[in-house]
Length: 209
Image (cartoon, rainbow, N blue to C red; front, top):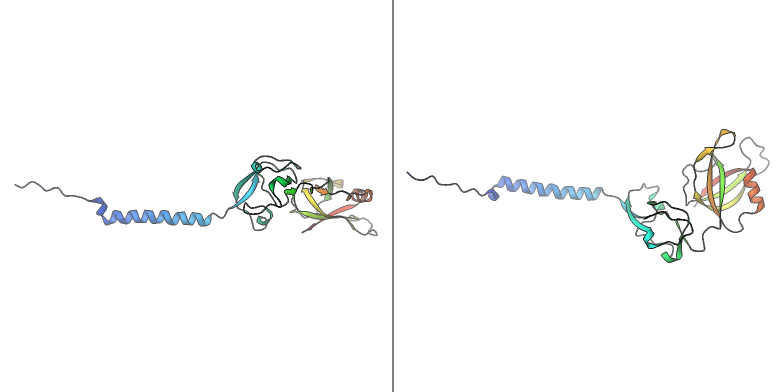
């Protein structure tokens, strides 16, 4: 009686196993490509820690952060590939920023060109753009308020004032909502009659490029 012959099995020659391995590799490659295609984040500059207005900008203050921004805001912030307005050692912070904040195009100014002062404006609801943000520029107009005699015409008292803080809503005179908005002013912009007009009149902010 002959001894039973042992059947030699070569698993790597099994076409079903080879097909399975190929399918796994193919799905891995396709998944990686799909993931990369869906990653539409962009590298922007942000601050590593809190910084104060007027302080010199240090290279260590800046860190690259990948985020996804909407089409209406992405152009307002500095990408890592963008150029600064000057060399870093010539720049100062235009305003206070908290840790993790993205840098918009007005966060950095050349040393010596920052605003000389800050002016708080109490602006009634409906008299400023609701989506106003820090860094934008506004014309400040003063005139008669709703229901007041309109003999006096509105006058522009500040041109292209930079918004330092868009503030938050608070209760105003007569219970109507108002917002305290902080704008930067330069030397010679705040004459006595300008301050008097702002204090006594109805303030309206018009966003300008």
